[in-house]
Image (cartoon, rainbow, N blue to C red):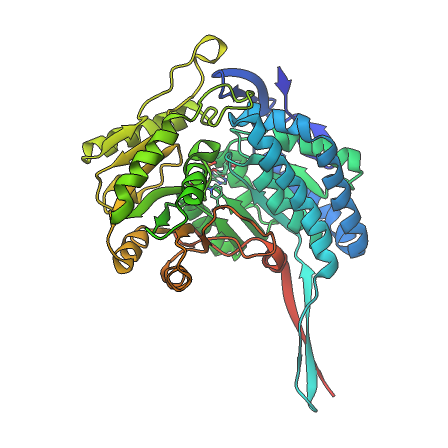
Length: 480
Ligand code: NAD
C-alpha cells in the first residue's frame, strides 16, 4: 500500500487528525493506498510555514528562484517514467498519455516559469517633461493553489510554478481523487533543496482541506481549476475577503466542422479531441457540429473509427481509452447517456460500461459513445458531461452554427475546421470562448493566455498573464 503524507515546512508529515482516506485505482476499482484526511489544523500549519518562508523567498534574486525551478524541472525529467506510471495508476489514463503529455508538460511548466521570470519586466509611463511613472510588480505572499483530477500533475504545476517564480510561497492541494504525483513532487522538492515552507502540499477533501485554504485570512490569492459549481462557492467565499481570484472552470466545447475542411486531418484530430483522456479534458470538444453536406460521410467514418478504439488496461501501448477516474464519475457519465436517450437521442456506438475481465473487471471503463438526433438546446447538449461522450449536430450556415456553438453557459474552448481562411477568421471572431483552435486541437504555446469566458472562468493563466496574477502592481510616480 502506498501511503501519502502531507508536505509541510519542508517535511513529509501525518495529518493532525491521524485519519486517512482510501486511494482507489480506477483500472481495478481497488484501494491501493491512503491519503491524509487533512483539516483546518493542517492548512493552518502549512500557511504559517508559507508565511514564515515568504520574506526570504521573495528576497532571493530572480536567478536564484529560477535555479530552484529549473532543478525541479530537471528532476521531473529524470523521474519521468515513475511519475507517468504513478499518474496512470492514480487516474486510470493510459500510461502512454501520461508519458507523452502529462509529465512532460509538468516538467515544461517548471522550466517555462523558471525561465519566464528571467524575462519578466514591468512598465513605465513617461509624462514627457513633467515626470515618469514606473510600475513595480511585487510578490504578494501566500498563494492558495487548488487543482482537479483530470490532468493531475500537469495542472497542479501550472499554478505552483508561476506562483513560486513570482516570489510567492504556496499552500497547494491536489485533488483527493488523484493525489499521488503531487506526493512524488514533494519528494522532488526535498531533493531539489527547495527551502522549507516555500511550497506546502496538503492532501484531503475539497470541502474540508480545500475550503480551509479558501477561507484562510493569510492567503490573499487563490488559483483554482475545477468544476463551475465549486468555482461559484469559492468566488462567493473569497469575494468578501477581497482575495485575488483566478478560476478555470468547466466547459462544453463546440467542434465546428465545415464541408471544406481537410477531412482526414480533421477526422484524426476529432477522435483525439473527443476521447483523449477518456474525454476528461476540460478542452475536449463534446459537441461536434457538422455542415449538413458532409454529415453522413462524417458520421459513417467517425463511428467506424470510434468502434475500433481499444478500451482497456492503461498499461498497454495500444490502449486508446483507459478507465474513467472514479465510480461516482462513471455513474454520472452513464446517467447522462440515459438522459440523452430520454431526450430522444440515438446512440450510434458505445453507450454503456465496457466489459472487462480478470483484475480489471471491477474497474471503471466506459465505451466511447457517439449520440445523434438531439437539439442543441437540450440538457445533454448544454451541460458538461466530462467523459467519453460526444453528440453530432448538423448545421446549414455560419450564422446557425455560431448561434448553436455560443448557446451554452460555458465559453472555454472551440475548434474550427475549414480550409477557407476568411471563414476561419470570421468564425473565430464570432465564437464566445477564451480559446479557438483552427484546424488543430490542444496545440499549446505556453506563452498564450489560457482560460474561459462566461461560466468557464475568470482570469487567464499562461505566459506573463500568470505572473501578473501572482504579483501586485504598484505605480511609483516621480515629478522631475
Ligand atoms: P472539483 O471542483 O470537484 O474539484 C477541484 C478541486 O477543488 C479538488 O482539489 C477538490 O478537492 C477541490 N474542492 C472541492 N470543493 C472545494 C471547496 N469547497 N473548497 C475548496 N476546494 C474544493 O472538480 P473536479 O471534479 O476535480 O474536476 C473536474 C472539473 O474541472 C470539470 O468541470 C472540468 O471542466 C474542470 N476543469 C477545468 C479546467 C480549465 O482549465 N478550465 C481544467 C481541468 C478541469
